[in-house]
Amino acid sequence: MNENETDSLILRATLARGLVSRRSALAGIAGIGAAAVLASCGSAGRNPKSAGGTGSAAPVAAAAKDMSSVEKVVNWSNWPEYIDVDDKTQKRPTLEAFTKKTGIKVNYTEDYNDNDEFYAKVRPLLAGGTDTGRDVWCSTDWLVARLIRQGFVQPLDMDNIPNVKNLEPALANVEFDPGRKFSLPWQSGFAGIAYNPDATGGKKIETVEQLFTDPALKGKVTLLTEMRDTVGLVMLAQGKDIAKFTDADFDDAIKMIQQAKDSGQLRGFTGNEYGKDLSSGAIAACFAWTGDVVQLQADNPKLGYSLPPTGCTLWSDNFVIPALARHKTNAERLVNYYYDPKVMAQVVDYVNYISPVKGTKEVLLRSDPDVANNPLINPSAEVLAQAHVFRGLSADEEERYSKAFSALTVG
Image (cartoon, rainbow, N blue to C red; front, side, top):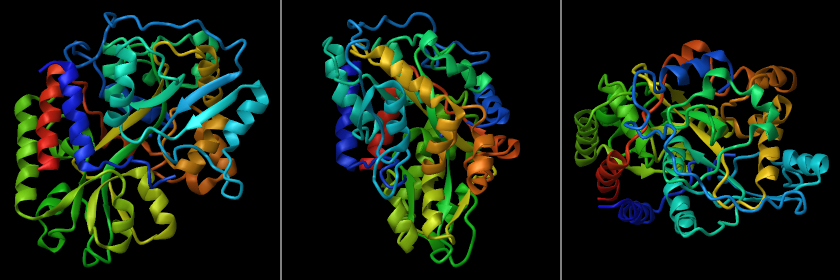
């Protein structure tokens, strides 16, 4: 099966599941410790190419004539509810301030509902050498690896992003983009376990084993449709290192999930639409993302969240500029703007994910100490010690693993 056929398979599985964005119901790395976690889970001792990285052999993305100097506009696609919003006016304060400061209008579109779904929309245009109509968007780590590998994103001109100096140092060299030539992180977060004590009999749900075997939870457990988070959490519970697992390790995790599904323990697989049912108790416990749960706890403080003692997954969504973008310089100026800690603090205060910009916590300590001191938003070194990054995949691995996981979640 070639890569185009794989894309088609993934899209069909995605649509069959009726996926909803991980952020469609919500509104993530601050601190040296976060950078250290990502560095330790990166590509040290491994060939980036063999793990799905790109090294220096990535195809060169086509560039269009940059119209930034004459067209004061930038087109940004992002996930729903993933930027600060004024609840009274429904305007986006940081975007309004960017336009006032630079004269550049931002056409901000919340049309990024799922990585595979979005990729399926833009891939035919990128492969055909056609402008996508977008100058920048935010993709999760693993999709950035694919976009770089296929030559679909352009290298960033760091001269236009002087605030890159505020990027956490160890984030400057990640497995899927060594040297950060093509991407810069937007937000990050953990995947762990959320639970409703009213539906668990008052019990805390802190381990994957509880989630998969506790009879009190039978039929009231959901896992995530994001393969790397669900399989990653299960592999960690099995004592595997998700930075360097084997095919056999992956298969063992799929088997464990299949057994839980066949036993009736699982209610199903979700994006972040678990929020309503978790709050009502229809879902007793589930794999969930930190930002979602922080938001849900604002309305239902009884909801609990655990990072399993066996480890949690850590992911990032990243700015990338696609091939043939017409306003590349304007896009880079936008990225630079959000790498100002004062600006990023406004975003984090609203979305409740983890910032990759140094100095964000210090700003929040002055403006919103509760958010600044929330360990799910500004995690401590101890919390970060539990976090692991799912390794990059080769094209062949991505095909095989996606097919196996899709069959599990759809069937």
